Amino acid sequence: MCLNLVSINSVFYYSPCCFTLEMFRCLICTMALCSSRTMKKKAKMEISEGPNWLDLPRDITQNILQRLSTVEIVTSASLVCPLWWNICKDPLMWPTTHMGYNDRCPYNNMDLVNICRYAVKRSCGHLKEIEIEHFCTNDLLKYIAEW
Image (cartoon, rainbow, N blue to C red; front, side, top):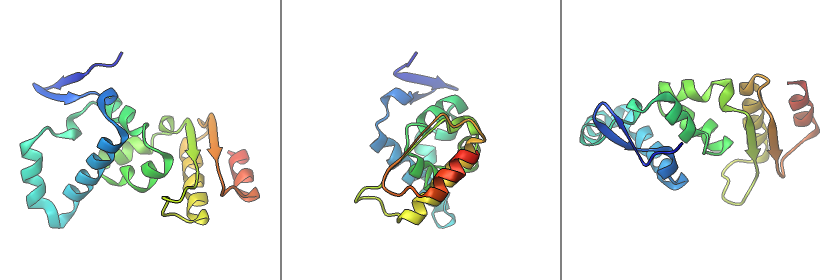
C-alpha cells in the first residue's frame, strides 16, 4: 500500500510513490553537499528548515533507493551518509541489476564492468535478474556465473 503522506514524530514526509527519480537525484545531491565539511554551517541551516530525511524509516528509504539505477546507487547514493551506505550494502537491495551504456553516461566500459562486479558481489547470491548492455566481456560473464 502506498500513502501520499507519511508522518514521523509529527513531521510529514512524502511517501516513495510521490518521488520522481529527478526529485530523488536532487535530494541525493543536496544531502551530499550537506555532508561535506566545508558546508556544515549551511547544512545545519538547511536541515533545520525542513524535515530530516534521515528520520525516514529504513524500509521507506530502501524503497526509494531501489528506484535508482545500479550506477547511481554505487557511485552516488551509497556515499551520501552512513545510513544510506548500510542500506546500499544490504544484499537484499540487489535482486536486480540493470546496466547499460548511453551517451550521457560519464563512465567508460571498464568502469561499468567494475560497477557491475561490485553490484554482483554485493548481492551475495541474491541476484535474480541482470541486464548488461554494450560493455559485457567474457570475463564479466564468468564472474557473474561464479556468484
